[in-house]
Amino acid sequence: MKMQRICRRLFHGRRVLNSKPLASLEQNFSRIPEMPPFDYKPTPYEGPSMAEILQKRKEFLNPCMFYFYRKPLNIVEGKMQYLFDENGCRYLDAFGGIATVNCGHCHPEIVEAIVKQARLLQHSTIVYLHHAITEFSEALASKLPGDLKVVFFTNSGTEANELAMMIARLYTGHHDIISVRNSYHGNASATMGATAQSTWKFGTIQSGIHHAMNPDQYRGVFGSDGEKYAKDVQDLIDFGTCGRVAGFISEAIQGVGGMVESAPGYLPSVYSSIRKAGGICIADEVQAGFARTGSHFWSFEDHGVVPDIVTMAKGIGNGIPLGAVVTTAEIAQVLNQRCYFNTFGGNPMCTAGGLAVLRVLEKEKLQENAFVVGSYLKDRLKALQEKHEIIGDVRGRGLMLGVDLVTDRQLKTPAKSETLHLMDKMKDMGVLIGKGGFHANVFRITPPLCFTKVDSDFLVDVMDVAMSKL
Image (cartoon, rainbow, N blue to C red; front, side, top):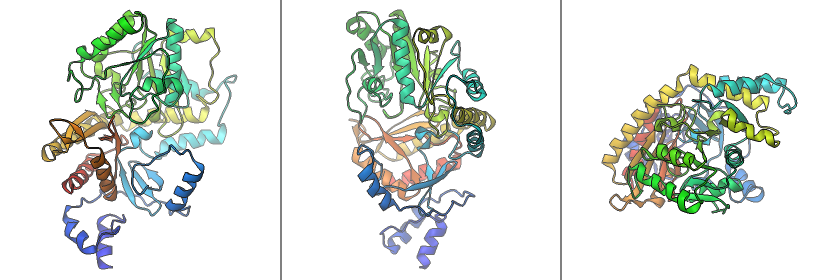
């Protein structure tokens, strides 16, 4: 019992005993990092247990749903950069930013904005006016460069990318769209086609979709030479589309694809080729947008380009179903020839929350924090790379980082099973991290933008201990 009390004090209430003998834990205490203090007490949980939820999930929910860990977590509460399970155990969330949370779980100002609007009016159709949607669209447009000023609201990133591809085809009068291999653009039919060779999609075939070589600086055949990768897009235009295209869609940093950042010079060259072929350029900012890369508000800005359409979701609402397509007035006019509307896109409750997100990002200087803390964290991860041979590459910007795990650095052999093992060990020590990449061997580090240097130290120290035990 004495050993158990010591263990709980060290981990601020986290249960770490599992099935290991106490003597074994005592020997390893000096190597287990201590979680940073956090002045918050979670609400006692009185709902169904993890086992009960898992059973009902298997019986009633989509069989494709998956979870990362061998023993899945029942997360019942979140506060800023932390999550709590059914037992009140606290975890540092190093993955929530991709899940949707940029400003922190249950940020009080954002929650208040949503609740306040929900008490007044949760939904109004497009035939009525409401100030929330216009105020948010104006604030959102102010964050974009050039003539990107007209906003279409959706409920998700999938809807946003579907709409963007449709607009490109209607505006140009052409059908062919080029996307990048290993990308991820959504779960609907057309976006699954554009998703190309992602790690867990169905390979849905769509007419007029062409997949260009991935400008991967680590595993790609041309290294960091973006111009050579761009030549593949020009070849697709010349020989695959009869010289005319509707558009090109890409992420500047592939999220699901393993935090792969486009090689320098790639996007400027491709954008030029696409426009010469009569097409328009779509920037998918669903995962990398909203200050996550730190140096800029949008990841495409890191490459010195201005797209014709920008799509966004996830971080735009800090956890609520909200997405958007932003384009120029000229391109937007093409939908006047048809009739497009979205029943719930831009509803007052979600847009009130979206406006609160922008205000919090500015008020708390979260873009600056993403740059400072992200740079610090990346440096620490690179130092860890020098210590552990399993780390083949550390990449990304701001608080959108990837750690590529390999069993052989020369051959760059993906360490797929080791990745799962390490994730479980890190979870046991209080850190939740994501994974991705074509081979599912890349740690995806995308915490809420309120992440601190102290949190970064804890994350890296936990990763170090887990890798030392391999």
